[in-house]
Image (cartoon, rainbow, N blue to C red; front, top):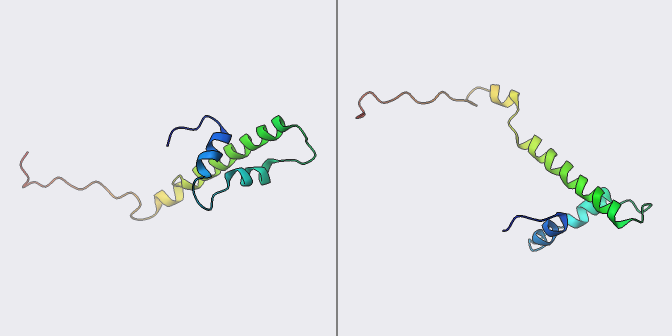
Length: 85
């Protein structure tokens, strides 16, 4: 899949995946019916996508608490002294 040029391009590419509706999600999150300006609503949709990406990256990043759990950062294995150098 080629990199997306903009949000509209990303929505078109994801529309091929059954069950996805990124355009609908962004419209629900960002479109203000009181603002008739399509450019303003597109800017709001762009910001909504950036916010979703930031939230996903935050949730995917290992937290300091998770890294402190036993076994989360095992020490590297010791070299085998019998292995040829």
